[in-house]
Image 1 (cartoon, rainbow, N blue to C red):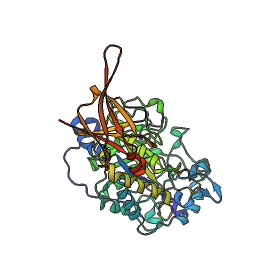
Image 2: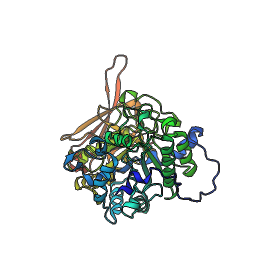
Image 3: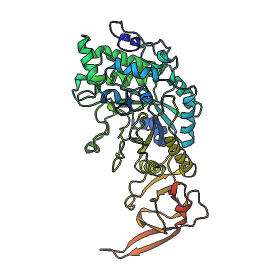
Image 4: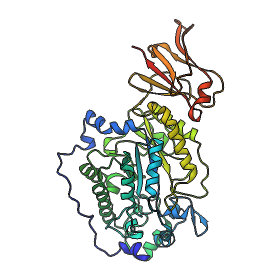
Length: 479
C-alpha cells in the first residue's frame, strides 16, 4: 500500500513521460496569436455542440461520501476530513474496482442523451490518476492494471463523441505540491502535518515537472483530444506563478493544435458572479466555466459553459439524493442555448463504474426530448436582441428561430413579440405538426405612435403532447 502513496515520489529522481513520436506540424498558432477568423474556426464545433457529459470518477467513488463511517462528502472527502494521503489511500484503494466495460455504459448513455462531447476526470485533487502512467504508482494502471482513460477514449470515440480531459492542477497526494502559494487554497490539514513531521519539503518546481509531464502523456497517448478542462486556481495560486500556465497552454496547443481549454489556470473562473462582466483574456483560456449556475445575462462576447450536477455532489455520494428533475435539466439546457453557452452535465459513477439509476433516468429523458427538439439546440446561437417575456428564451439557426416556451401551461398561451423585431414568419411546434399556432398582428396606442406586435397563440395541447411538457415554438422566416 505504501508503494502507492508518498513512497512513489519521495527521494526518487524525476521520471519522464513515455516517449511518443510527435507528428511534424506546421507552426502552431497559439490562442493569443489567432485572428478572429482562426479562433472562430477552432471554436465552431464547440459552440455548435452545446451539450456535453462530465464524468467524476476516482478513489472517492468507492467511499461514497463516508470514511470509516464518518460522512465527508464526495470528491472532496479527503480534504473535508483532513486526511493525509497514506490514511486515505489505505482505505480507498482496496475499494477501487471498476467493472469491465463500465465506460461503454457511460458512452452509450451520453450518445442516447445527445451529448456531443465528454470530459472525464483524469486526475482529481486527490492526485490519483485514472490512466496508466510511469510518473507515479498512484494510478489505475498500477492499482488495478487498467487504463480507464484509454477505455473511456475508445468507448466515446467510436460513438462519435469528442474527447475531453479534466485535469486538476491541485494535488493532495504529491509531496512536492506547494499549496502555501495561496493559504486559502484547499488542502488536507493532516497531509500538511504529515509532510512536516517527515521533513519532506515543498518543492513546487519539482511538482510542476510532474504536472507538465502527466499532461504531455495525456496529450500524446490517446489520439485527438478536443477539450482540456483545468481545475482550478484561487488567489495568488494561478497562472505562471503557480502552474507555469503559459508553458502548459503552449505545450497543449503544440501537441493538439485544435484543442479548446477552459480558464481555470487563472482565478477568473466563473465562481464569483460579481465578475461576470469581465472579458476573458485569450491568454487565460478559450471559455469561462461558471459552476452550478447560469449567469443571468450569459457572458456577452465571451464563450462559456455551465457545469452542472444532477444532485449536489460531483463524485458519487450515497446521501446525495437531491436530484434535479429531467424538466429542470432540459430548461437549463434551453437557457444555456438562449444565452450563447454550453451545458456540461455531470454523472458520478459508483466505484464499479455503474451509473446511479436517477442519473441514468435524467440523461435518458433529456435524450427523448432532444430527439424531437435538437434543432433548437445544436448549431444555434442565442437570440439576444428581441424582447421576450421574462423567463422565455430563444435560439436561432439560419432562417429558423426557436422559442423555449415556459413549463406548466394548462391553457392557451399568448406570446407577443414587437413587430419591428420580427420579419414575416410561419409558426409551428417542433414535433407536433397537428398543433396549429395562431398568429396575428396587433396594434396598441403608444406615447408617440401605435405599438405593433406579432401575437402567437399556442394551444394548451402543445404542452400536453410535449416531451417532459416543454414544447418549442418554431418561427420560420418567410422570404
